[in-house]
Image 1 (tube, rainbow, N blue to C red):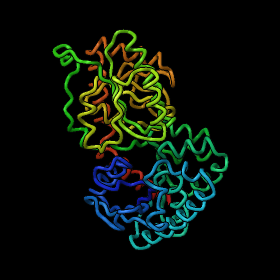
Image 2 (cartoon, rainbow, N blue to C red):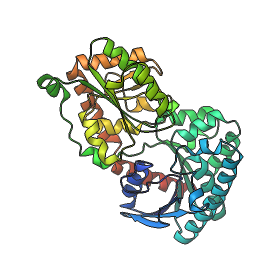
Image 3 (spheres, one colour):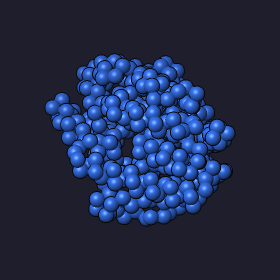
Length: 399
């Protein structure tokens, strides 16, 4: 089996958190198939490199200083900022098509696997049509949200998805969204989650019930996310204030960066929580396991999260989890079984859940143990590779 994988984000180094799940997926698949990745170039990156058993070729779409559409945030937000962004995107797509077509003609894959329906899926649809190569498209959440916000994207998505033999989604929520939006049919859709980095499976996961009983310490809250409006980290800061008002010595560590960092820092200062909130910025994945393992609770407060892979990382490291009851999160966080959930933007409900964990660490530890078992059974690179190899065979049969 030979596979050309198309993506507009792929790790720039082995420990790069951007698109890290794609590296783990391709390496898992690469153990039993030949994989060539086509991804955009950026300053200081090589045109060709190898990550273990995976070949990566990066295409140029502008002079190095102007290659800023990829690896610098959400691509469609860059494109929406003005005519310059739209011209840059058109140039990007043209270069992407040429690079993908060249890779398919040289590598002669049995399947093209495109991640995110735009731009990768659209490019994959064009190349699939030109070369008669079966196409698989994987959606991840941000691309589905784009369909909700911009009416012009739906006709383009219908054209793109019609060419795909199989469309995979990281969660049941994303599958339901694609059906509700009317851009494809149920027969093409398969729910197949992305894998978690194997390094998290090796993370020590001590019982927080034992630690809390033997060594009293401040109640440590952790979140790992992009600092954007969609992630609603402001809800966690509000909940921290409410929990501290109840006499719980809670502290918050925030890993990540984004355009909302300044606003969040202002919120912390106004609430006089400076001594209890720590902004750690972006961290490579190799630094995350001890952060997960040391916290008393991991919180994800996103609105309509496509999947929430960071939840799986936290659970593998033994962290009890609290997350919003929306998007694809319920696939992982089953209330009262593998974690606790709360409604979007509801700081009071989040504070109540935090208090429950803080006052009952044995309960929190049991839910974390249940969650870890779920992740080990469903979200490993080996399991993901098995599922996608089956998807590829299905796509070949349908062509």
